[in-house]
Image 1 (cartoon, rainbow, N blue to C red):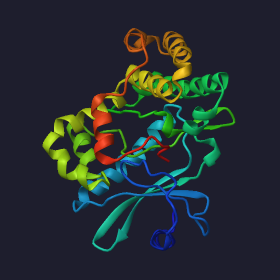
Image 2: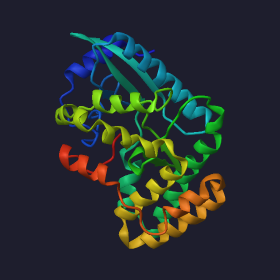
Image 3: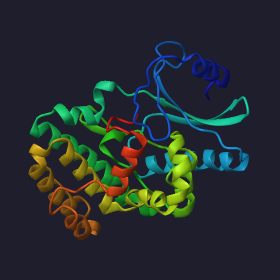
Image 4: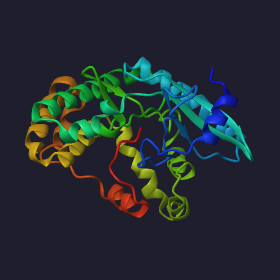
Amino acid sequence: MTDLTALAETIESHTGEPVSRLGYFCAPFRPTDGPFADKVIKVYRGLPDGAALDRLARCHDDYADALRRTGVPLPQTEFVLLPRAGGRVPVIVQQALPETALMRPLMQRGTRDETLAMMQAAGEVIATFWNHADRIETRIGFHPSIRNFAIVDGRAVFFDTFPPLIHYSRDEMGRMLLQFSDKRLMRLVGPLIRWRVTAIQDEWYSAPETLVGLVGSACRLRPEFAADYLDWGRDFATRAMPRWADEALAGMQEPPRLPAIWTGFRKLMGLQGEPNV
């Protein structure tokens, strides 16, 4: 169990740079010393609704368990509700992965064969999840973007567990995307276009779209290898995800584009394409 007093002191004293600035929900950081020097800490916005926070904690625990049950490699991850002035805030404490292992920068500088090997590693995690997701008897999703993977000893490790994509209905998850965004502009403007915000999640709950999304991200990162990534994706869908192959193949006839809704929100919120660890 995490020492909540030490965790609160670590968060209060943190003055360094975040590990990543992309985070839609928070800016994760890794302490330079102290009891959490080997951890990444993610602090989220609190809510005035205590019951909603308690439910969030239960859903996160269930989600981490479900990821492991479906074969997704996940670092040691703990979710706590930390007492702070004015209430409790959600905090995730996760075993840190080497920054040199983050998949996105590795994809940016790797050779063709190296990047294809990383795509294969990430694809295997995606296929493993969806091929075993039937054993989870509730609504469950997965967000296996390149920025949410690290490559450790040739194996893809997934590390993004927030929001917990389990149990919540589509409308509830849409509200969460607004409630927990650390972008004030998003919380102000989002309710006016809630149906669009709600639609952001749909890819995460679709097996073929998660694979197409991975291939699309790779094509945008390394357009010189786009044809190779498309060939890999079409072959992988047929071999490893046959139940969804037809839909996946339809989305990989040409380099997949980032949905306009995402490009619009990224510009609105000033988000950049960096690893969200």
